[in-house]
Length: 411
Image (cartoon, rainbow, N blue to C red; front, side):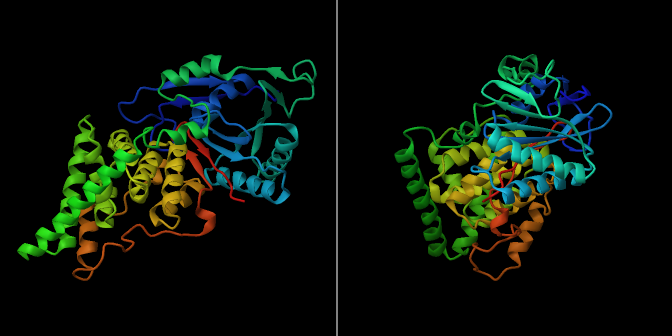
């Protein structure tokens, strides 16, 4: 093992990624990980799941070497020098962007896949002037320190470890940061309940008919444009749902959740909701958009999935943000809001950057300025790069005193 400087994590995460101080009113549990097995127990709880076939980078800051940001990369399989260099350069870039001067590297998997990536990352960090506190490889319940050549403490056969039974794991779980078995398990939490496909389709058809009836009523009385009535109805319904979840309640009717999903397909409704994502209520918003997403038919997935991604980013839960982005882009590859958030996560932007550029009143004014009767299929304020590089390249679970990020370079 390298010099035992130790690292620490404070949970839950405050909102400023460069601050080790908790937000007002937050209780903080501090966890110290000064040994390799403690680090290996900490990482799954920072990411939200147990990594495999991955390399993880922890960026450390402050006198206590507190974890400020964590990245996870899929290992190239088979090894690929260009891909390895891309990972190494991106890791150093994000650490420099976060103004961090120390790091820990952990590779999960067999030596032929892990070591080329670790070697490239070590070279990149050294060139960037970033001190490497520790570098580990973990595989099959054993770990090896890449920086240690003393067989007395780092035997050739490695050392055994059990991250789930370590006291650090218990402390993190008690602090509200459990670790799922793998990333797929996290993604499954956003899928519809088993056997619900027919019920969701039926609820969606009812919602579509309900929306169509609004248009018929509007044309019949001639007092309002059908699209404006639909947008007004949608904004009111979604706002009621937001207030309901903020009050600690929830929507349990599949028909009402499908109705919200259908209404959010109108960008005027979605953008009004987006502008109301005050970070003070982020946990309530996570519940809301998760419920709507799980009840949405595939064609109505992008909006609630993107709203969930934005709110998860605000929470410092980038792993959740990225599986939500995956859902949105699988349903509609060019969905600009999802691409915009994916690009921000790839850049390593902290939760404090997840700010609302427009108020609800400004969103309404921007749409009112459009031509009367124009379609609500424009981009609104959700305009972002749609480059292939922006898609699914970052899984960020980042936060303030403790942040965890995870990125999957494309290729």
